Image 1: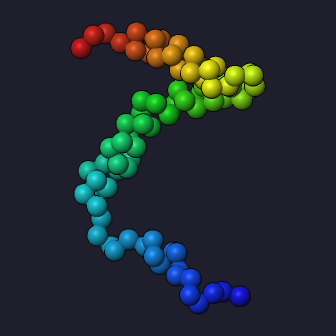
Image 2 (image 1 turned 30 degrees about the vertical axis):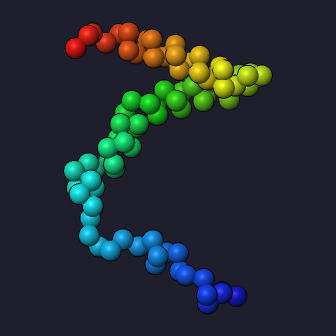
Length: 81
């Protein structure tokens, strides 16, 4: 049975109908989200898959070392701007 004193979360989280300027400028989301999705998330997911497959005793260290290695590969391959 529903509790009448509990607000309807769907209604409480419904936007007012006015789009935010960020949504209009960036279809992929907020600038921070776009940046993360482009620069970090692909490598983080790859590293997490590696850790999950290997299941080392020290997963954070292994993930960190993977990300450092990937950073050297990706950023080392770029020409200086």
